[in-house]
Amino acid sequence: MGLILSLRGTKLAALVVVGAAIGAATALFQTVAQNRLLTPGIVGFDALFVFIQTGLVLTLGGAGFAGLPPLAKFGAEAAILVLAAMGLFGLVLRRDAEDVLRMVLTGVILGVFLRGLSGLAARLLEPSEYAVVQQASVATFGAVDATQLAIASAVLLPTLVAAHLMAARLDVASLGRTTARAVGLEHDRVVRLTLALVALLVAVSTALVGPITFLGLLAASLAHAVCGTYRHAILVPAAALIGAAILVGGQFVFERLLGFQSTLAVIVEFAGGLLFLVLVLRRPAR
Image (tube, rainbow, N blue to C red; front, side, top):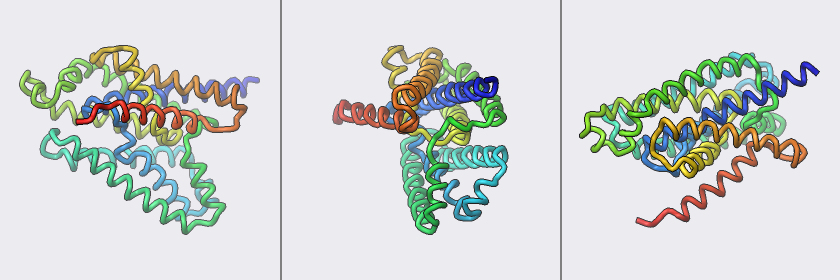
């Protein structure tokens, strides 16, 4: 009984931590990108994670991949994701933070490129090894390691606190670069710091459970609708709480109503995909 309660406690904590991280990261990313249709996954986080899994299986084989030390694998994946994100942000925004759109488009192109490489590598795998890649590339909360969760929490919680402390500057940054600079805000520095926080939040949560592309869009959109404010001191915590609530509620649906016949990621991605279509179709043409 104690083991069961411990496993359920670890799963619940993972749902809350990951949901809060992705929700907050998306709210921050949308502020920087000046677009409520975007999520951090669009710049290639998810594609890079899948590419890492595919490359490891191709190099080590299914048995070698399964034999990797979980903690070392988690740390390496998180570090690669953070370094890749900061490399992209630093390369594209090396002069100033005005052309965020160019950064997003570069990330989209890199994501397509990595997905192509992953698809090519997958064709070289045996069917059993391809199944391993498929399983490793889907977000799962059923086997979260308590040590990894503790490390992720130790990284994610201070990052959320830092985002909250930047709330007033983010309010000004959301007005646009020209206006923000006119009132004395160091806009470029705020953008870079915000993107660093986004990279940490998304990289660690993705390394912990895997990619969930549309969760952030759901959480951030609901936070905007519920709060009805631009103030990041309210908006970012709301997105974090809603993200956690979505995952916990989705897990309840997954376990109690669907009888484990699907995965939580499929439920979230389906709902998020529908919301994305609604937002795109409702967006006025320019």
